[in-house]
Amino acid sequence: MLSFEEARRVILERVASLGYEKVELLDTLGRVLAEDVIAPWNLPSFDNSAMDGFAVRAAECSNLVALPVEGFIPAGSTGAPELAPGTAIRIMTGAMLPAGADAIVPIEQADESGGRMRPVATVARHQHVRFAGEDVRRGQTVLPAGTAIRPYEINILASCGCGRLRVVRRPTVAIVATGDELVALGQTPRPGQLVNSNTYALAAAVRALGAVPRVVGIARDNPDSHREKLSLGLEADALITSAGVSVGDRDLVRETLSELGVEIVFWKVRVKPGKALAFGIHNRRPVFALPGNPVSTMLSFEEFVAPALLKMMGHSRTVKPPLMAILQHDLTKKPGETHLVQMRLECANGRLLAWSAGRQATGIASTLLAANALAVLPSERESFTAGEEIPIHLLDGGLGISVE
Image (cartoon, rainbow, N blue to C red; front, side, top):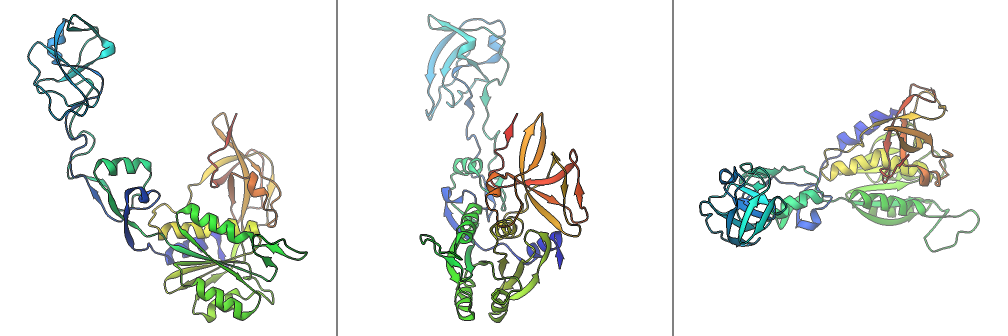
């Protein structure tokens, strides 16, 4: 049985980034660049004013004398008159700097009357001037391959005229639930039955990462149904199953996957919850067989599946960065296995404080509603004392921690 850390390392070693596709600029949001982006021109492409005001020669303003205002340059003008010696030109933000000018006097720092402008404060050379290429130079690699695209990157890409770009392809992720006890969404479960909620939670988690979920359906507790559904699932870039991976008479997932040619890389991890997790490879495509209890399913996805899908999508940062939080009460755990504890995190006086989010039983899905972080308690420890720091990471949406 692998440790928590070993299992995640093995998974990340066995998955690889997918190929690329070319998409429209807005469709790159959340995707990863598959090519370097070279600036085709300077940004800004011409010297321009950073303020509404007056273009001047700074040396002519040393005595704060009034200068005649001759001309006006609006934003968007494709040409600018030359600044005559001893004069000023009214100019708008973003407008081209006239030849001869080397500073801008903002409107709020000028007295204007009778066609003349007098600065009311010292004028420094180059003040409020944006020079061509001061942001990005033509020929510069403005964004390297491997960059994850946010709205900020879209801004610079649009400024460089990039209408279509190569990005790493998004994986399609098949999702198969197993069990005769499951009923489809929209049906009222009878005693002994459960709504197939794991499928929708997993599909939502896949979509939240930026991958494409493909719901295959429910594999019933017989070999034929398992072979049918899992065969369909193996056509996707990745396959996730929930339940049927333990040691019961009807836990058919691992056996069926092996029959279908899946190499089972490992089964079981020294982690709670999520011990009965299997990972395999089929034609270089990852297969994750997750436990069926809802908390085990979602925390296994969080810690093992999500990093793999992020790597497939080209992300270099696949594991959430660890933080340290101050435990607000004692905790105990079984030694020898990593424990994943759903936590409620708050910030007070610049410190992160952590409490248990509620009951930690794997069938109590409502605790996840109160949790905004996950404590990853190391395997060698069995007790943790109020006041000590513990390693945690944020769950999705966990940035909304409360602040005193």
